[in-house]
Amino acid sequence: MARNLTMFGISIVVVSLITLTIIGFLSGLSNPLPWVSLAFLITIVVGHNHMIKRRYLTWDDSYSVGIDSIDGDHKKLIHLINNLQTTIDYKTDREFERQILNQVIDYTHYHFGREEEMMEKYDYPDFAPHKAKHEIMIEKVNYLVQAYEKDEANAIESLLEYLKSWLIKHIKGTDKEYSEFLISKGAR
Image (cartoon, rainbow, N blue to C red; front, side):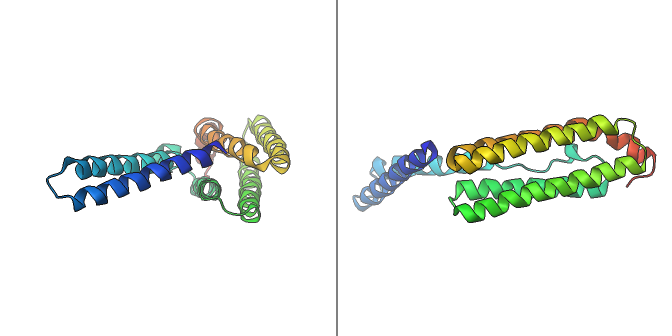
């Protein structure tokens, strides 16, 4: 709700600045009013675009674990999480939002299965603790999805922020720990 009010307020300011700019230019190019209005308008648009861009995850090479299939999975998860962010930013219908959320959850399960299969194949010594972290994450997501079912407007933001922060922390933390071992055993 707060985001809707903010967007409504920004829309009013933008329309007002456009109107001031047009009226100002009608009174002559030497009038400072349209130029000041235009400068504020550009600042608002650029600032807003910058704020929106910060909500989305971007793949960074520092996230790479050095195993192509796992890096591909992580890139796909980033893409799916960004799709979920888009459903929130552009107020899509609940059915589409739920469809994207299910894609994120389903692909997370698929990815965890692939990671765990690889760890078992190469006898990764910390397999059990890593798998336990996956299970804790799944439990937390299930809890947040239940909250979403009860109060979608407020819970989706929490769910999305959890997914973003968990994914990056997990990639840069525990996934980096297993990657060196698996690569040394021949995983690519």
